Image (cartoon, rainbow, N blue to C red; front, side, top):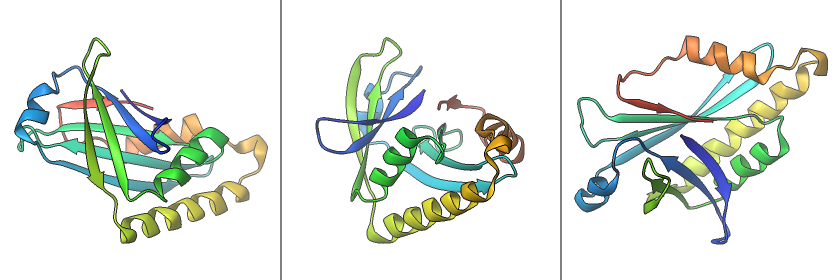
Length: 157
């Protein structure tokens, strides 16, 4: 499970509850990649944060979470991520016990691109009549259009 949360640290972090014990990732300094993606559908724009933990390079642990720009709390989290120079991934084990935080660099270009992605999503959201908005349907379509590349995955959001 992956979700966003505002913290006492004064920033939005991504919470990752993993069925795989993440302790070895911290000890081995396992690389992590991430990417924000946008798809525009007739019922809603879908913003996905896709994360890969390269613990097994041939079959990385893949995680995703979705943001609905039509939901004020999710939009606020997404906008906060667009202003942060880092993105923290707080890893928890399957028993929901905190294990460690992986801090990812989120450079100026990445923040600018995320800001543009959010603006594009908001513009599209405003063109959809309220009676036709359905984020859940758009998310299902996103899953059909962009399935995971790995068999080793966690789904969230």
